Length: 301
Ligand code: GLU
Image (cartoon, rainbow, N blue to C red; front, side):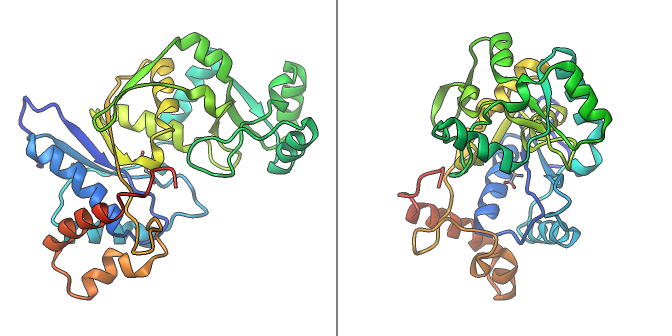
């Protein structure tokens, strides 16, 4: 793996956030991506998605590396860490700003909830989060002078994508999932998404899109909980003129009670299994069995 064959084209990645201990589901995702690359003589990257300083911890990154090494995986060096790539995200934001597709948003969660309540609009449910709602556009309407004055005043602000303008510019888009076939991108479903947070000058959607392109990832493998988000990534690729990979969204693992595995499920952490003397070879088989058991669990749970 460390010496990909010159004609190999498949590039996969595993991109965990170091916010907790990895469990069987992460092992499955990592092994899945690694094996696809390995079987094709391709390249496998480990990427640490650590943009959230409040939730990411170095000890969890250490644990990720320990667990993956225990599973027998290897990856290209150096490891890409998102916290060290803020210039790349700034460049992408700059490009979108020059296309006049971004605007500053000063709203708090409370402002947004109040506006949704006031307008009587039923929150338009989106993607993976049951409580996520489409931004009602309060700051989209601010004039240039007000925006400049509030920024000069030091008011914290996020940067949002002007979704209507962005989709008009990109035109109709499709993407291909190896498991579910050709998909029509529907990023408008998410409204004016945040591309740079108030506290961090990027967001998951922007960072993952920029990084996959920067690393030449040709096949993005990840859980079905991120299936809907792919529409946003596809749109950003079109706007930023980036290469378009294929995707393969894989089922999420659930416990015996049918509840999706979470980082807090100690019994399923790789660390616990290692300490109990589980053979790493058994992890892949266990993950496959668990998937069969979770067959009734839908991705967006
Ligand atoms: N960092 C994300 C997570 O840990 C995965 C992102 C992706 O694979 O696109 O859930």
